[in-house]
Length: 160
Image (tube, rainbow, N blue to C red; front, side):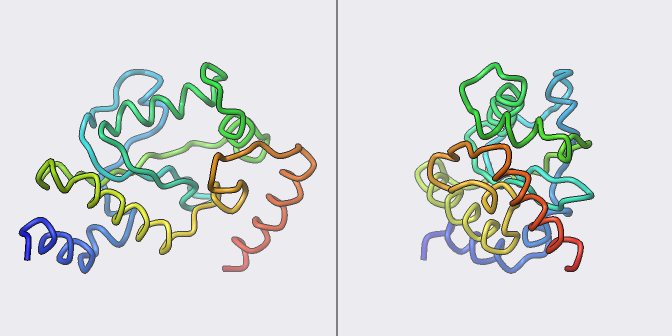
């Protein structure tokens, strides 16, 4: 078996991967202030104390990808679902970014490894963003639909 996939199997068994709160972390405010230091490839998650894990993705450069998301929330990129989601009055809270580096995998397998780790993380965490929007394209929804979905999901989150 390829050494990368042996490492992948070990990673999938390890709490340092399975529990996102064990990943490296920084505030999304650090992105705005150019203080984040994570120009690595891997998996990232955006979360909050109130709503748990909100979004999970993969990136060749975690810093650049998170910066892109942050710019979308500021209206600097054409991503209406991101702007709607993070500008909502209920969701203006201190967000944290978590990241898990995959720099130690070979370049030829890294994208595949990242896709597997991203999907496993999404299946475990069931991020709020994916519950709010269709996963394909993250199409924006009306504000009324957004409020209704958020209210329903918030009740589920509070009960869990």
